[in-house]
Amino acid sequence: MENQTEVTEFIILGLSNDPQMQIFLFLVFLVVYLITLLANMVIMVVIRTDPHLHMPMYFFLSHLSFVDICYSSAIVPNMLVHFLAEHKSISVNNCIAQVFFIFLLAATEIFILSAMAYDRYTAICDPLRYMEIMSKGICVQLVSGAWTIGFFHALLNTIFTSKLHFCGPNQISHFSCELPPLLQRSCTDTFTNQVVLLTSIAIFGSSSFLFTLVSYIHIISTILRIRSAEGRRKAFSTCSSHLIVVGLLYLTAFFQYTKPSSVSSEVLDEMFSIQYSVLTPMLNPIIYSLKNKEVKTAVGKMLGKANFSSSVNVILFF
Image (tube, rainbow, N blue to C red; front, side, top):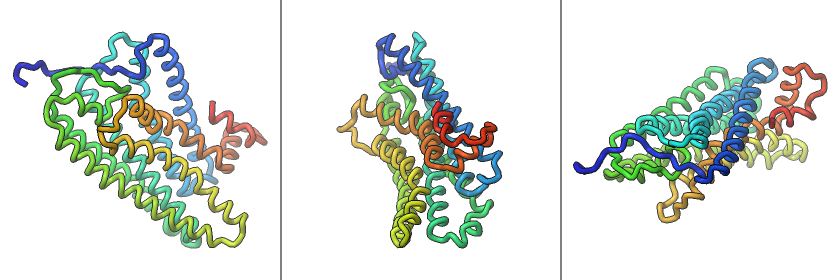
């Protein structure tokens, strides 16, 4: 290693080397990013301004929208620059910083989703004590806890990543600085990093997943005991959007970070990464809004329309 030159920047190869395809991808992801910003900001403004939405469920949804804006902004703008730049480089320090924010925001998101699962569990399984259990103080503690866990999860992995040395090749076959492709470029042993990564995922990711799973086991068992078909439909409709969001995030992220290297594929890795880091932040507010009449009505009131529910879907999507 003494005779090897230490790498000071990485070349991000991105999704394509074809100039025309890069322009097309730039336009596609620019639209995705703008929709992400607009849809999540609409959710945040509506929840903040409409008194009818000052409830624990929407408190968590507002924070989820904020995390989605940050998550997308940590990846997509740099990605867009690389689509048009001739020299698609990023310094090692900036790359490691991006790793930190990806871990921070991803972990925060999954724990906010867990808090939302607990909120739904309380609303359906113990409705008479719902407002007592889900007090403002408890909601703030749950969100603060999500950010705290996300910070320590990111800090732990970033500290060990910063101790690595990179001496070539300096090309990363990805569109961002995620940890798995970054570890492949290290010229020092990454066993400790892999152990830390898998251990932190096992502790933080699995605990969040199990908490969400247990909550929904109780929710589903309670829904099935409801005699009225209409009552079961209403109860399940309050959870279906959350289940879709959780499924999109967990399935792709868990597979990406826990799969063995023997089944690794650049195309597959990029598809999964695009799903949970680019598309999920865009889809979250759309999924929640399309399935929530209260949010549709609130958006209509905010825009000063009398009967706006039928057209809010188009506003939120574009």
